Amino acid sequence: QVQLRESGPGLVKPSETLSLICSVSGGSITTYYWSWLRQSAGKGLEWIAHFHNTGGTIYNPSLKNRVTMSGDTSNNQLSLRLTSVTAADTAIYFCARGRLSGSWYEFNPWGQGTLVTVSS
Amino acid sequence: DIVMTQSPDSLAVSLGERATINCKSSQSVFHTSDKKNFLGWYQQKPGQPPKLLLYWASTRESGVPDRFSGSGSETDFTLTISSLQAEDVAVYFCQQYVTVPPTFGQGTTVDIK
Image (cartoon, rainbow over all chains, first blue to last red; front, side, top):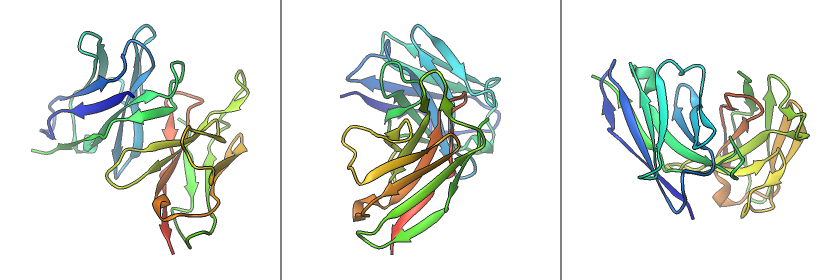
């Protein structure tokens, strides 16, 4: 079955760029919709963006100016870049897949998540 | 964005008793083309990611016990655990996905009384 694993630096300084990778095994990122989400005490669960290999990428308007999501089909990985981070971006970041190949936002499965703290 | 509001924020139920969680959306989540409510329910246990329990408001994901059920339409929805088990202690979230961005409720913590 498909498995997702997030990785990246646990600590990022304010105003810098956060970069995360989601490594996918047991399935190809060339099919399905893939999303990044985050969870924080302050904002709860928040969807960030989704990627589809032929359908393109859609972003949450609240983050659109700062976020880039892309897919690396050679390595079967998804990436997330978030620029100009502040303490408000401190969260657990998850990657998740749509339940079926045509499902945008019925999220199953999820990765275990990676905690990112923004602090100097 | 559609705002999802859950009630209560927390509840404690005796083992074997019914637990009911409500979810209200700020606008209808009924998808007119598909004729389905685009509403999902998730369960999250400590240290784990959320797990999809129900989609289309009332359809159980594969492997989810039938003590979990969902109901409602348009703007008002309910998740019911018919007979609470110890392993059901968790935080439960509703989520709408009829519009972009998909949005989640604030969560309801279910514990044992």
